[in-house]
Length: 156
Image (cartoon, rainbow, N blue to C red; front, side, top):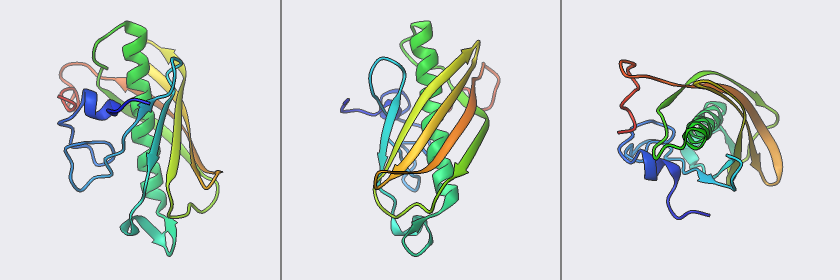
């Protein structure tokens, strides 16, 4: 496991609510490479204010975790495929979350894996587990943006 997350390494100034290291009020997820196949892992400890009802995490928070973590898996996949030193800035084109069971307020474990790359688009599948059970899954498409897009410099 790497000591520095991909977010901290490649976008320390990011203000994204889900993954921005510079957003003191955000979730500040930290994703780490898990081998050479593009898989990223993340452990997240939700706070009491992330609850939907007593002891269970809000579905919107789960969606944000899966979205940002998957987006980083896509960015890192493009970086690795292209032999770049920095990942291209990617944004979410679409993502579909399935909430499979109530998610307890405990450490959450996320795994995101790129499953298809076509040009600037990467499809990623992800899971979110708590206490050894899959609580949510996600499949999304993420796209590298070019100069002129409002998000282009967001990781800078």
